[in-house]
Image (cartoon, rainbow, N blue to C red; front, side, top):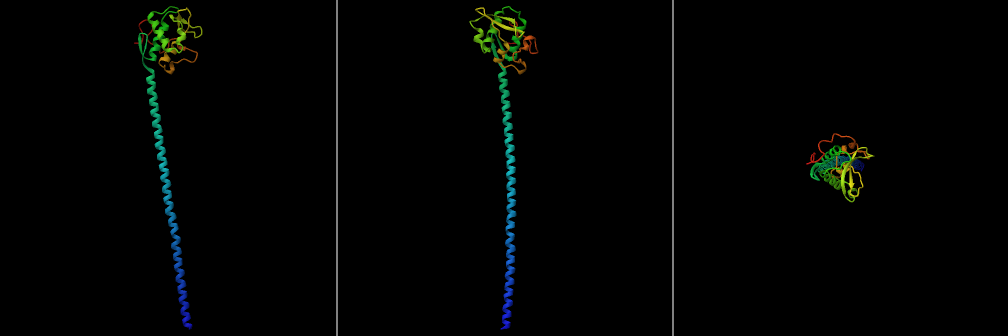
Length: 220
């Protein structure tokens, strides 16, 4: 009986030891699995974030390039529109002008070549009448009952020469040809005077070329 009991005790100890060893192994194996899973998941998450960041940068770059192209196209269209606005041809009286500068040159030179307080000839009368009709925003008021003649006077305020329409009823008025030209075809910015000051009426500037009296001039 004693031997039988000892054998049973040894067998129980062996079973217990074996069971404990198996449990330890199982614990080790089981505990390693979650760690491996986390590492794999972390790598995937990191790669996903990198892709998102790269995709975001790529999209931002494409959007920036697209905006630059739009701005460039808009600027090109504005330049083309500006060229169209500043170009003619424009017919006034007996002449055709290709640009606002040509119109300006013609009337500027005529203004400074014709004698003061003397009626202009019929040719220039028609030129000035159409300039007034097409270019002045208050042309109807300036013309009134009709223009009998045009003269060139020294304006008391501007201290320079200006065109003077003399109406059929004898009343007179003044008008600045520069504004009329600019209304017909916009002048370059450097040819526009300061508000209330017509500095180009007091002396000849670089924009004055040929033109003026009678049938001569830079206009066609």
